Image (cartoon, rainbow, N blue to C red; front, top):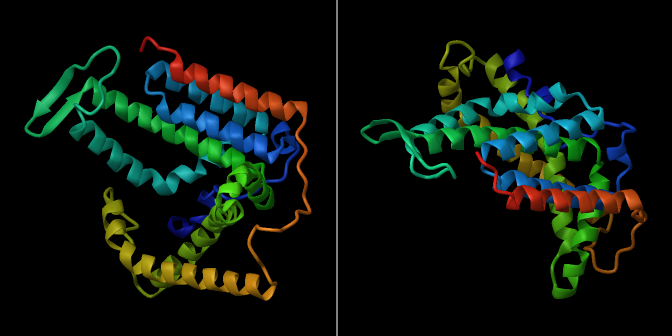
Length: 282
């Protein structure tokens, strides 16, 4: 039954109480720092740059006092997809990325073209995935859904003057994030129910993920139906409580930034600018 226990491997969207410095930061400062570091992770393509980014993320994880192994549990459900994407990048994207040191062909046979660029692309993409997973986990582990909602709304509130739905969009994003573990639990329930009726999800063999992929459709249909049902229940509950949009709403929670929050944002901006502009040798 361990093959059907998805909830324990879904870490995104969960909050873990703690008392490290990350919990004491203003949600707006955490969101801004998260945005700039993610930008650095996304657009840094060198080996050395990604190693520095990974080291930085690991240091942040250590400061948060949250076990690194618990953060990396989210890799297990996505591991087959990661392997497939890495193989496709290695075999078919030989000319897509040209490293600063130049491109060199390592192997070519028909439409299969492996170069130093494709190898670097696979390694960099894998490191990026680890970085982003840890960063998202850090954000959601140390920030409640309510804080994320109000923080996003506060950051986007200047755009509301131009008709931008800041409150509605922040509510949608945080609600979707909150539903990740709930849908994982529902997926686990559906798979266990179908397995008890004789469904085979490829629980054995080296290529079991191929058989699991073929069984996705019977799982997705009831999962989407349940997601729509939960969304409808949420809408009815909000309407029953006379919920309205962000215009004219007051807030019980008032954020006040401290020097620590400003320093966090400034450091993340300087760090992102350095990572994006510095020419790493390799």
